[in-house]
Amino acid sequence: MGSMAPPPPTPPADLGGALQRFGLARDRMRVALAKGAGMAETDLDALEYLEAEGPLTQRQLGQRLGITSGAVTMLADRLEARGWLERRPHPTDRRATMLELSARALEVAPAELDAYHQAVRALAAAVPAEHRVVIAAFLDRAAEAASSTADGLTGATTRARP
Image 1 (tube, rainbow, N blue to C red):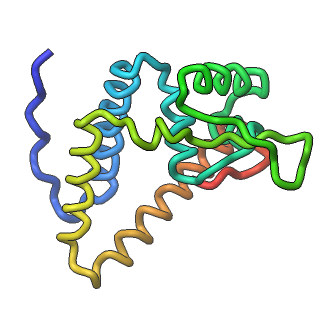
Image 2: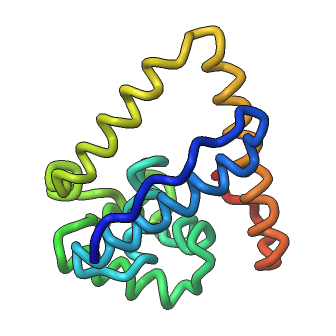
């Protein structure tokens, strides 16, 4: 399938629309990443949570993904067998298991993903410092709104960090 033309420029006042278009484009990239790695999108989601937040218990990861304890156990089994994550004992709760990215997961990434991360870093660096705080606050609030909506839709009792 050929590449699609980029969307037309966004009017500066259409932040909500720009955020939605970014989300859709990122979703498309994630689908391609998961497919290229031979994994389900939920598996990729799990790796992203572990990358963003560090080690999580199976319960915490299951809450963030909106899946049952049995499903998160199977997901962890799959990702561990493929070398993407490692299980560690919880430091204070012997009943809990911590999940964390493996060294392999931190080292191996498609070149396209590295290029995407570099492009985003370059875009962020080009934003004047005085605007970064406002932009970060907007994105944090948008993430909170999305997380809150997800919690409401799934009936979650514990709010997961975005």
